[in-house]
Image (cartoon, rainbow, N blue to C red; front, side, top):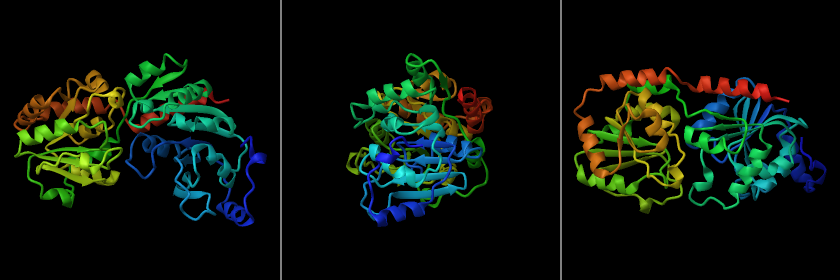
Length: 379
């Protein structure tokens, strides 16, 4: 399994005992991901949880500084019998290799699945039969991305048998660099979000927010056009804007503080329909910058499944795929006009359009197609 197992640094007797007590197990697939499993529930969780119904998976997150008990190699979360999540307590990604013998029994791993090229150095140390790169974002363009990430991605793609992309723009970029690239845009669990169309109880912390509500959920980071949100809130003081989700790479001080903008924090995936039900309009106020150049927002289809009219800035993949169903805007004036128009409009026709779109996709179908492709390339 691990080429340099014999060269792994010696541990103290106490530490070795603790590692051994963690228990080695056989895994069919090892996943390396820059996103925490218990963070916002999105593409990795949807796909990997479905693949785990047919194979045993170890999902490895980025390291957590070892400020816990120094004798512990990491924290192993048992999501299900078939899916485990490892939170490594090591100083950097390269050091993850030192603790893997504590968890992994097999010497060869059938599938290595990468969500971030930052884990590429581990390719030299682990024997994978098939390497998959599921490129869900152009991470090298995100705020704070290390400059060497581009070279790490080149290395990963050179060793990957299969590359999946999370949208058409990413597909067009990556197909120039690899011979086996497949486009799998973000999909949807329609049944889950369609709960917002039923008689479910609206979440308590949104019930007292004055109507109408224009809402967003997801990570709040450099991809959100905060000036657009601020200026539109000023122009429409009788409209409540609701932002649901955790902050990332920005501070609370960066957020616009208009009285009609409400920040409700991070909510679980299971809770989202109870908030969507309260939305009169769903929004995607993304900035048009490097970080959004290749995104294919998962929430587009989720908003559709909840039957909500959608307003979005002109994200390339949204324009390309949903221009007939999503109201596209370029500035605060168009944003305000779109809100006022949609609040007085009947949405029966647009919901029929949503239905036609949603019938063509599901996360179940995406996972099944990915698995079929992997089987063709399996060594």
